[in-house]
Image (tube, rainbow, N blue to C red; front, side, top):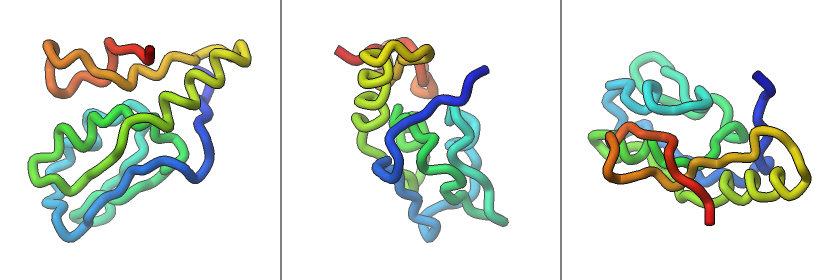
Length: 108
């Protein structure tokens, strides 16, 4: 699979390591392996790979992860306009499906 490219140094993803309990739920739902376990806490491994879908923050039981949807979606729209493959962002989750859903949405 081709590596997805998003806008550099603009993702809003943040992890409060003081709140993190190390449950790993965010690791399970992240579609791009943006987060990684650092001992007993999670930290950001590759911020530029974040598509800002929000799955990590919606599934964190202690609100240690925060992200604002949008920038990853904007990159997908730009890539689509440029005719690049893999331009879907899936940044708007279908709330009728599982809370761990990271697809099924669209940018419109």
